[in-house]
Amino acid sequence: MSANIAAIANLKGGVGKSTTTVMLADGLAYCYGLDVLVIDLDSQANSSQVLLTELGLDQVADQDKGAHELLGQFVRGEPPIAGPFIVPNAVSLEELRKAEEEDDRKGWVSILPSHPKLRMAEMSLEEDWYSTTGTPSTLTAALTEHFRGAVEPLLSLYDVILIDCPPHLSPLARAALATAETFVLPTLADPISIWGSKQFSDWVTEHVRSDLADNSFVVVTRFRNTSLARQIRADIQDVYLKDRYFGAVIPDSISVLKAMDRPSLDSYNTFRGKYGSVTADVRRLAQRYADFMYQRTGVAWEMVRR
Amino acid sequence: MGDGETLGAGEYLDRLFEVIREEALGNPEFAARLVRATGGQVTFPERDREVLLNPVDIAAREGAEGVYDQFASMDVSTLRRVLKAHNLATPVDVRGKKKEDLLGMLSRRAMERVAARSSLKPD
Image 1 (cartoon, each protein chain N blue to C red):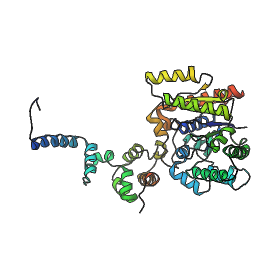
Image 2: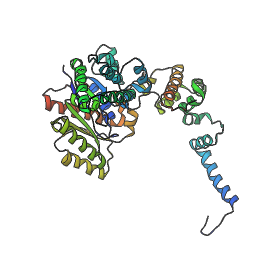
Image 3: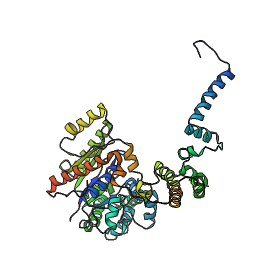
Image 4: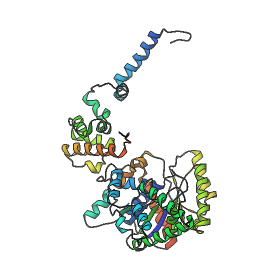
């Protein structure tokens, strides 16, 4: 097993990066029985909040787990080891929990969570780095090296690593992008988001990954089925980002909001119960991602649940 | 009121409050909002309590014991509906649980939600 590393990224905020991250994690773990690690590098910590709840987030931060600890390790000049900072159980699906209980694990979700502390740690690091002779580029390079070193031992432990990136291009965000092999680009079907996606794609292609287009998986999120939105979506797919692979469309739905609100850290729900009217959309998202990966690697993931 | 008809202030207010009163009597949710807005204390019939009582709001105002007391008279199926309606539990969470377990879950999770999401003024 050698995990595929995907960055879920867009320069624009509010396009559904965390929602896409969580849906993809749940969908791949449930439908294909994959072991998924979510690395949350957005200091808003939304995917961490969704998977662990707000209370759980504070609990794991108190246990010295989280991405800010990995950054602290870098600051202290220690070797890159991410394992101790990972929360091994971020499962909220009853089917996964039950299978594990019966010693028949088929699919699991773990997380290297984020916390608002991450942004403070990053700002402090940037201030220190730039106060000497450091530049954003040298910090990005050093963080990329640390990050790759930390992720490398994890590749044999997971099938998929999903990095939820922040909506900006800080050195930490760029290090995450440089570590990823594939790029999941959530976008809304509106003119502002199209422009944000273009800015992001052009910048990353020029400065981080020249092969971004070939490795991009685009997801249209919060889709409202109006004639305007349909037209814009068609333009995104057929004109503006026509050389990308397109995933499922995630509708704007109350079911999405409900799915992103885990009642408690000891609360579980079935896949269908959690996703309600968007269950088929989440399944389709996972299927399209599996197809995308098959096209790239030739490895076909076997579906274990429908 | 027909075109050109004018009303005195008293008549105008009488008509307005009559409409509000009628709506409040037929619409318990509206009545609850009115009462809350004026800061009054009003009791509601048992049949309306499930819809009107908000466990998170009670947890914030009265604490875990308040939640327990306010919901203690409800039966198991009503408690399940309350927990799910406020997204404090999933159908999996409440399956096979006894009344005491559900009351405990309701008060604990309502308190957790208040603690996690309320932004407090400094002392």
